[in-house]
Amino acid sequence: MVKLPPAQTSTRKVPVRALRATVQRRVTSTRREMHRQLSPQATTVSHALLDKKQQLLRELGEGCVYCGRAANTLDHIEPLVVNCMPTSLIPTELDVLPCCSRCNSSKGSRPWRQFMRSIKTNTPEEVNTHAKRQKWLTRYDRWRRRHAQRWNIEQHHTALRQLNTMVDEAHAFMQGMVNDYVTRLHGPLAVTAHARQTKFDWTSIQCQMMDVQ
Image 1 (cartoon, rainbow, N blue to C red):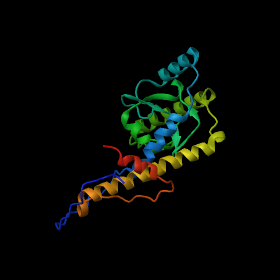
Image 2 (image 1 turned 60 degrees about the horizontal axis):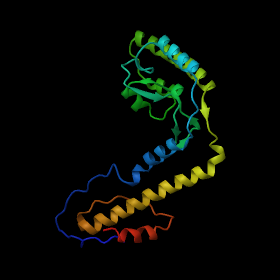
Image 3 (image 1 turned 90 degrees about the horizontal axis):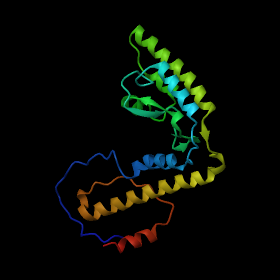
């Protein structure tokens, strides 16, 4: 194990801090980013298709395609990762649309239809504009899917499961090591988090960590 200073002891009672962001809880973010990386590079999109995209955007008008606010970011109309697994989409310029940061954050990995149903409309004008945007998105998405580039994720199902297991095990191991460190460092004052029991043997990693100065 890692060499640490002697544990400190104290009789003073302190409140236990709620741990909302732990090493182990970050596993979902790591897995998502990993799967975003796994798709191959896309082939070049033709100028004709890019011009068609701009033509369709002009028909809708400026702003976020979902709500109409000023667009300051881009969103993948089709998620790249759902339930921590890739959707097979190889992203190109056709798959991203102008979006405001609020909608981008709120939409997450939800399909755009599901997200649009969650947007509240309070006035007849908002209802009409919202319906117009849904109609445009349906049309654009139908056109985009005809030209979407994809890779065969079913063929690599076993490898994907192995990678998911690797990420799960690595985060569980790291959480256990952090718990061990803070316990040795602070004793009863240490703030620890639940660490899932690992299936992999991390002995060699622990031995190598002992040699780190």
